[in-house]
Image (cartoon, rainbow, N blue to C red; front, side):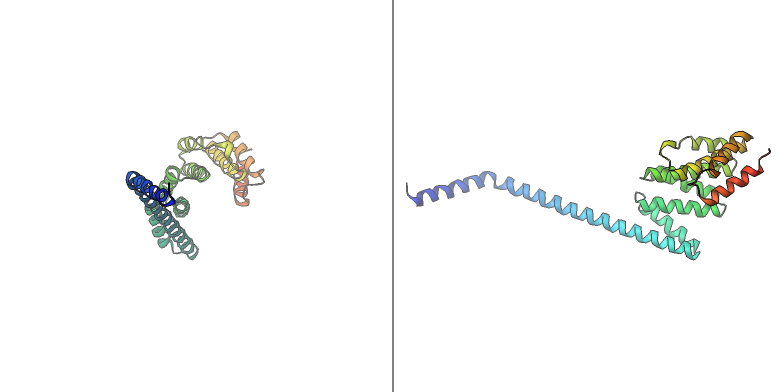
Length: 213
């Protein structure tokens, strides 16, 4: 058998294989190409969304520092509505809750905190939102509801500073229910917690001093 005949047979074998498998191979390559293109597009879109969310949050922070609270609300609500799954949305909702609380708009603050509890991806942010909601309810003298919310906190996962917040709310609830012994215990834990903020320690100390002896 000559070399030419061998090459001829090889060419025929390739043609025969391609006839049987060529379409399937091209289809597979096309599927891979489309999938890769789709992945790149999806990844690009996620990057764009993340950058937009970051930019909106930065603008919101700048407006808060400048005291343009109307813009704070507008940018925060836009971020929450357009990108609810973004971690920036949860942070924006927490900021809006704090802003509303300081204005005395407790119902609005409550709505923002409940939104965080329902939508935030980060459990630690949910914990903080839960603690703040419990304190808000205690401040509104809704002590039974505040205790119900506080019971949902995973105490084992709390950081020491967060534990101080929980103890303070526990003290408020006990005080509201005329349980002076438990109130004193809660406030005293805050005062003795080295990781509690100085502001919270000071408030807890005032509450403790005001209790009947």
